[in-house]
Every structure is written in structure tokens, then in C-alpha cells.
Amino acid sequence: MSSVYQNIIKSITNGDKLLAVLIDPDKVQLNQLKRSIGKINASQATHIFVGGSLVEDNKTDLVVIEIKQHSNLPVILFPGDVTQISQSANALLFLSLISGHNPDYLIGKHVEAVKNLRGSKLEIIPTGYILIENGNETAVQRVTGTMPIMRSNIQKITDTAKAGELLGLKLIYLEAGSGAIHPIPMEIIKAVKQDLKVPVIVGGGIKSKSQLDSAYQAGGDMVVIGTAFEEDEDVFNTFK
Image 1 (cartoon, rainbow, N blue to C red):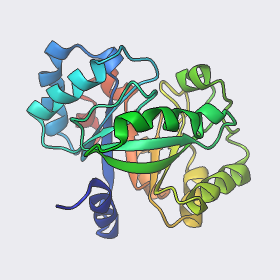
Image 2: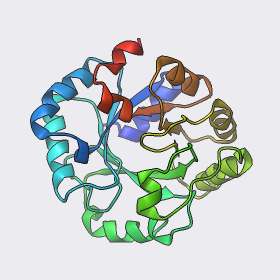
Image 3: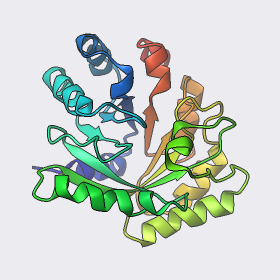
Image 4: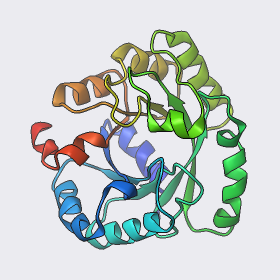
């Protein structure tokens, strides 16, 4: 059976543009998920991400189980903490916050997570996570105690992304943050994509078709929609 990562690579090779919807367990009600997932199934979404900065213990697992009952899309964990691991998901983005200098989010949390991952059937995808300044403080900043890279410093962003690739990370995730005022500029996405061989994920602040198209045109292989869907579950109708 093909892995989630192999299917991502295959889709990119075929010229497909991927779209993930981020479900934050802390912001959803289990009894309303069936309706929400129905909206996602009817959209152009190709993946479902599950995770948040602050989530109650065990709620991630309950949310993943509920999603799997109503969708055949791959469910990928996007954890804000080691407590957000569900063996019911298809894969886990093993995130390294390479834009920051907090050792907990470079290796410390990963060591903590091993007890839940050793022997697990979850597909583990090493992912470089780069937080980029967007005009608003994000939950990631508060939780990790790290600062984003300034959007004006494109060289540092591209160098950080390349360092992640050279370390063997399989995905690079450019993140403006939940509720971002500004999405990541096209010139940043383009510069990073041109410098890498691994797929580039783009998330944060994307709320319109023009912003979605711009992220793809600049070289984003997968775009993540979170806040826009939380605010309006019919947002995908505007993306067609």
C-alpha cells in the first residue's frame, strides 16, 4: 500500500495541487463534525490535518476517530504537543520548529513523543516548520516562546528551509500562523520552492481564491486552510 508521503510526491509529479483542511480539536464539537466533514468531502480538499496549539488530553484521538468514520481522505496529525498523537490517524507530521531556537521544539518534544511512536503504525513524516511574521502574534509564538522570521528577510527564510532539507526533513512547511493578518508573500514561496527538492506546504492567512491561487502559482505544493473554514464552512464554494 502506498504511503501518504509517496502519494503526495506522486500527486506533485502529476502536476496536482493539494489542499489540506486543518481541524483544531479545541475548536470543534464532536456532534457537529459529521456536517463539517461532509463539507470537506464535497470540496476540492485532498487531506485533513488535525492539531492545535492547545488541546485537551485525548480530544485529538476522539476527533480523529470521528473524522475517519465520515471521510476517506488521509488524516494527518499536525501536533502542537506530544499529547496530540492518535494511533487512528494515517500519518504524523513530525515537526521541527527550525525557525526558532527553542531546543524543546527542535528535539526535546520529539524525544518525549518516542514512547508513543515506537512500534506505532503511524506513518512518520519529518517536517521542517518555519514560522514567518505575519503582522500578528500567533499561538505558536506564545506556546513555543520563539519569534518568527521577518517576512522581509527572504534570504534567512530560504537558508533555513534549505538547512532543513539538508538535515533530511521530507517536507518544509511555511507557516504564517493561525489567524494571520497577511498570508505568506509569493516571493517567499517562490524563493523557497526554487531552492528545494522536497515538497513545500503553505499555511496561514489564506481566505480567498486569489490568495489560494497565488500560493499555488508561487510554487506551493500543498496549501492548508484553517481559520477560513472555521469561520465559514462554505468557504470552498468561493474557491471554485
